[in-house]
Length: 528
Image 1 (cartoon, rainbow, N blue to C red):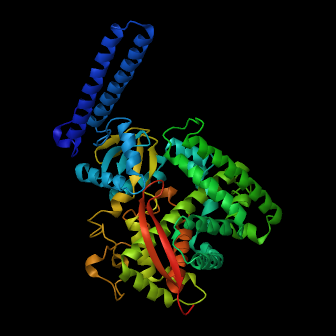
Image 2 (tube, one colour):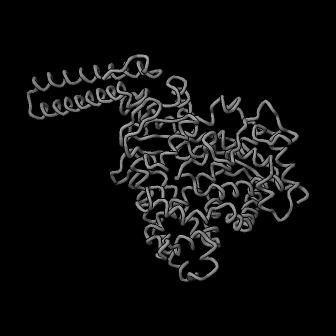
Image 3 (tube, helix red, strand yellow):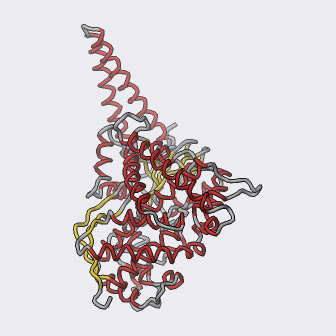
């Protein structure tokens, strides 16, 4: 049923024109394949042409189906492109050194508004990127109209027991079990070991006297997570986990879940198996050394996962579920921490006034570091939040409609996949003036000497609202938000307080984590 043109969204007619052109193109393939099959002199040639014709006919049907959904306002506008070619362009867009994906989303917003369709990982998604759109989508978690929906290859890599793959009551129970480990007040328990580990790493990095790769931050992040999880650091285990984790992440680039030997998904799943075997040994050792009544069973992430119980006093997780969730937590804090640190150093190196202000503030902080002081340091927080706004480590996330839902005149079918974009609200000029420029003053309090009223965004990043959705939202918001903030605060202060920092050779990265790859050099201050 065709709707009046007054109800058609901006860009809808151009989207329909794309479907018409592709339908004609595929139809010509059908005609050519049928004619070629009729003229075939061999059975083999006949079947090859028949298969090509059937495939082209299937593509015609797909274009017509999507066009009808657009006319019925079951799908918003958007340019989808031709198969294979668009997948190649997608890989180019997310490859190191390019900003294609970010630019593509911004171009689509200018043409279609904040709701449009795109192809990601070989599937059709509805992208939502407005502040109000994200508020609506995240509310679906609470009213049971949407659920988490990772691309199949990523869901497979996380595992069936991972909290990110759960929905409904069981998901809420897992969140309740894990949230206390990452609550802001509980996270302060990790400050001493994070600070100790940070000082040791900085001393090691500076002692080389050379420029080092920001890849080191991945190992650093893994050490911090391991220390918080097990209460100590085991270098050999961390190296093993780090090496396998890099291979596991490679599976994020797969367009299929079929484990063909040698493919990225097959290598990633084999690395997953090795990681789970390592975690199995670690869990066994932890349980031997730390019975349920021990201090570490109550004050570490691992203790909470192993011994956590539901309201009926039954253990919440099986061994396999524990391993899947530890793997998820490693992912959540490994590359995101690496990207956050590297991006912050990059932006500070490009903005010497901000680096100077942060160094001055850091030198005024007391020893030993205090969590409340770190949490309330205005320049530190402003630099951290502005770096995350410029380069959010995760570019977005996914939800799936579990029933027919309506929004802004659209009637989305049950099963529709939504891709919420973090890039779009954080680059919205109506929210952030001169959004493409790093300016930490937009997040400073009004009583700070460096405060600039014209740059005030009027946004408090700590509130975690959809005008600053760095850690996602809804019931699937990032569990480790407070832990991530503490890590970055400690490292930034220790670097600024004790070292001169040089940065060179920045390279853009966009997938699976967004940020910068850099080389850095630390030189101890003379009075150290």
